[in-house]
Image 1 (cartoon, rainbow, N blue to C red):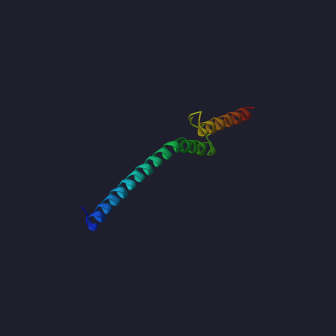
Image 2: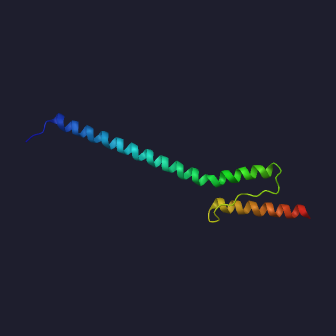
Image 3: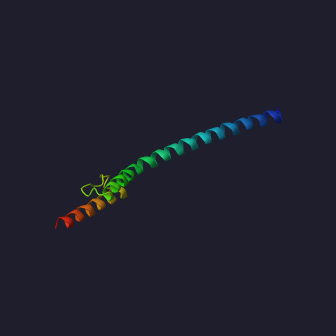
Length: 93
């Protein structure tokens, strides 16, 4: 039994609309998840920047807030704190 071409085209159109909507929804979810992960990952850097601004403004007793030592941001924080400690030690002489 033959199916009218209009009916086949209508079904294909509906399938394409559903696929496009599903793809758009998945892309929106992925974009949202990516932004969340990015912002969460940048929080330690933002805190470090605030601490560095305070130190640059004259708060020599300050230090950079610690982050996870296993990350690049954490290692940067440790290096900055080591540098600040060495500077304080030099100034105390």
